[in-house]
Image 1 (cartoon, rainbow, N blue to C red):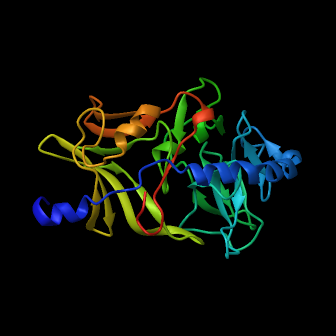
Image 2: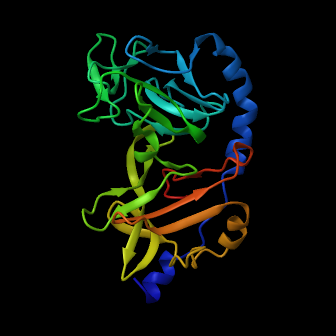
Length: 281
C-alpha cells in the first residue's frame, strides 16, 4: 500500500465538518418542526407507538426519529434527522423500505424496537436484542443517539450509535475487534434518493500496531488517512486545525476493540462526518 499506490490513496480528503449542510438544515428545520409539534412524542413503548407521520423528538428538539422519503422517492424509511429531513443521520430500514404511509414503529412483546407495515406485520427488527425484559422503552439520549432502555433498571439495552448508517456522530465509534474481526463501519447510500447500502464504506484498520481509517470502494481501497499518532492522522494536512475544535481519540479499549471516535463540548458545536454516495467524507 506504500509507494506510488499509497501516494494515490492518500490524496487530500475534505475532512472539514459539514458546516454548510448543517447550517442550511437549521434554517429549514424551523418550519418542519413547527408543523409536527402536535404529533411529537418523547418515548416509544408497547402501548405508545408512532405511526407515519408521527415522530419521536429529542428533549432539546434538535433530533427527530420518524418516517421520511428521500428526494425523488416515494418509498418510506424510518430514520433520525438533525433539525430537518435534509440532514438524515441514521436509517433503520435502509434495505427494506415501505411502499406506503401506513408504517408503525413500536416496542414488541419481546421488548425490541420493531417496524410494522400497514397489515401489522413485522418487517424490521431494529434493535434485535435477545434475552431482554419485555418492559422496555425507546427514547433519545445525547447527540441523536436512539436508545432502548430497560424501564425497570434504566439500563441501556441497545443504541443506534452501535449500528451507524452513512454518518459519524460525536461519540460514535468506528471499530474493529482484533479477536473476532467484527467491525462497526460507515456505509454510503446507493444514491441521494436511495439509502440502500452503496459501494463505499469507511472503517478502522490496524496493522502492525498502526491504526488508519480507510474508505473502500467495494473491497478496493479508495482512500486512507495515514497513521494515527495519538492525536491526528498524519496523512490529513488539515486535521491539526480540525483537532483544535474538538477531540479525536483512538486506540485499544482494553476489550480487543480498536476504536476511532471524536467528542464535542456541547450541541452548539454539533459536527458530523458524512460518507456520501461518491465516497467523499
